[in-house]
Length: 206
Image (tube, rainbow, N blue to C red; front, top):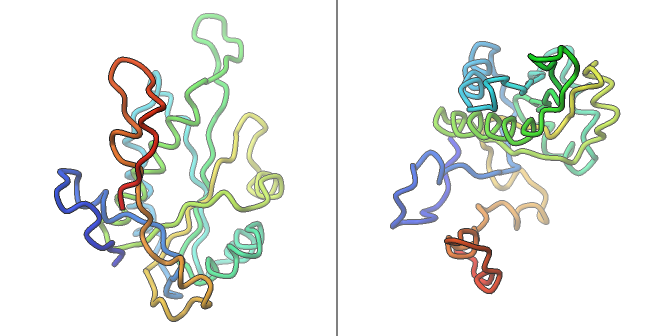
């Protein structure tokens, strides 16, 4: 199960959110399609502009015919640890839709925002169910877009590496030093009342 040290002992934030972090050590364990789809199902319940639901999630599971192909699109560094994961989920979104008034193609300006919200829900559900996730952008986007046979109007954003969290010792020494939950900027750094106040952008909460 993926858990983080006590990151914010006095916080009222849900534990499932605080316990979500992005490890690289995974156990080479399979995941059933039923269990994976139960995690992806959480993403369906994200809000989206006009309820268009622009997100699409294309996945491959460890031990299936598609696994090596999905893995091959990652940059070598990410391949080196993601090869032990249970699933790779590529995250894409629909960038245009047909206008209700004219029937002509119309841009979806919030497609990435909405899809990011859906992707986060999948990661929180995974953490709640005892799975670890690590979202990445380090892959060949053109190759993956073509390999997934995505239509031209769909944009590929990220991949979510998912699996059971493994032991620290399974990682190379240089990666072991990075295998800790990261800190966050203080609330006063990222939130302002009334107007932008860059003078506050100084603090990091550990």
